[in-house]
Length: 292
Ligand code: ADP
Ligand code: MG
Image 1: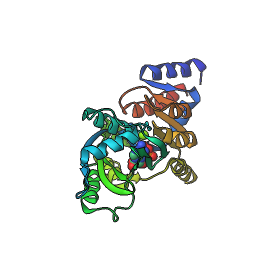
Image 2: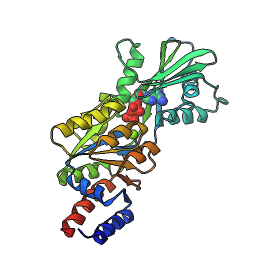
Image 3: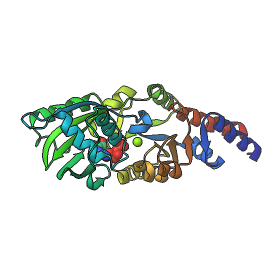
Image 4: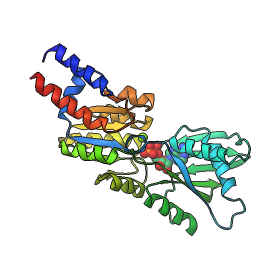
């Protein structure tokens, strides 16, 4: 392999919107057989928006008030879910959001704080059987549609379910199909719940799903695949993907991803589409085939 040919390959990659940390990353990309894909912000646009707010029947505060409390807490978070809630509450124009105090975040779980003297928590729904019927139904409806449902509790009482939508990137279905044609095995890994993951995976033709995966478990999943002889690429955008990106044979970060993700990756896709991924695989294979 001549250095000039390899350099030309990285140059061609750059023109395709594929930034490679070094030529040796191309070599590893060529050998990958399994691609672990993050959901939010990778297969989907990550621009989330609130699609429904369902307040529990028989409570005195309505949906707008519970949304306001939830959004007040989310001001302390930069999760895409948080941004969706804050934007939606501001659009309702009920004045400025109260300032949260004693804000706490549990990665992969949710956030809580005191708002107007009340303890407000916005989290993944957890076990559904303890919820009032209307909230349980709202969670099911959201997840069946591929949306993410978060539960709002005030003073520990379940008060509302907020359904947040995110859409698959327009080229995601074709990109996944393309990966498969290149002989790669696509796997969806997400912190989101099983039903939501299954709905999105179904839209994209992905059959292998790992849901409710905590950040450290994403890296463990990669290690398990490697132990079974797979060469694994991880594609992600979030802080919660950084450990898995580092553990992978090849880490691939999405443009606009968190600094931690880009820092942990060997390749960055600086395009708004996910077709850049099969393009990168083809670039690696083509380059190294012609050099030899
Ligand atoms: P992902 O990036 O796949 O959505 P995360 O690990 O960031 O995974 O989050 C997993 C789950 O934890 C989310 O689906 C949500 O239910 C909950 N969660 C995380 N952060 C927040 C937040 N700021 N507000 C509400 N819920 C959250
Ligand atoms: Mg993500």
